[in-house]
Length: 172
Image 1 (cartoon, rainbow, N blue to C red):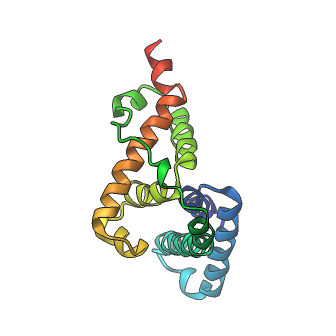
Image 2 (image 1 turned 120 degrees about the vertical axis):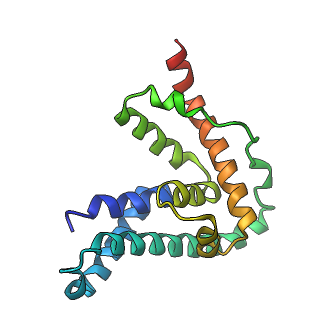
């Protein structure tokens, strides 16, 4: 458990954007690992199994949460007006000039600020290295929506990073 707890928690936290939910999901992952301990104890792919279970449980959690609140958002007229303007994200060279620890912290914080509809596909694509088609299947959305949400997520992430002063701190 100790060898994989950070990876499991980080996977859930990036997808949910919420540490408390990530802790609950991590506990569930390790409960499932305990149930499969006989198989996992000697498996060289235990880490991959845990990452897959963490991703699937998190996506299931987000799906249940989304369905639960969809009713209320539809009653309130939805939130269609909060689409970010599509802009180019902060260039990779900007983040490359910041030390790795600070860059990691800035990206993690910016990810937490993204709306779930952009954060989830972006994390699955960039951090879990899932192909577009698999993301579409996992999220039960069209391939075009996956690509659009990733593009908009990148733009929104760039906007958040620019707002956090990354660009101005490097320029000055």
